[in-house]
Amino acid sequence: MEEEANEMAAEKLKHTQIVNYLKPYAHYLSNNRVEECAVEYKVHPSIIIGKLAHDKLISFSSQGLFNDNVLQYILLQYVISITRKFIN
Image (cartoon, rainbow, N blue to C red; front, side, top):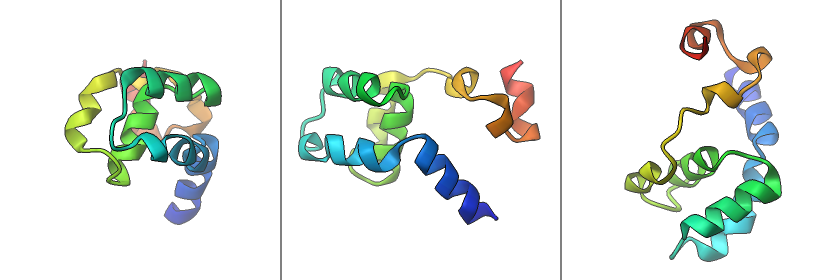
C-alpha cells in the first residue's frame, strides 16, 4: 500500500517530468531554472528541490533555497490524518 501511495504521489507531483527537465542542469542549478520548472509543471519549487535532493541530484544543503511550508498547497484528500493538524 505504501508503494502504491508513493507511485501516486510521484505521478501527481510530476517527478519524472521534473527530473527529465532539470537533470541536464543538475551540475549548476540556478533558482531561476527551478522556478521555470515550477511554472512549467505547476509544482511548488520546494517540491522540486526535495525530489532532486531525494534522488541525490543535488545536495540536501540546497533544500534551503525554497524553504516554504508546502502543506497548504496539498489537497486535503491527499493528506494523512496525522499531517492535517499542521495544515489548519
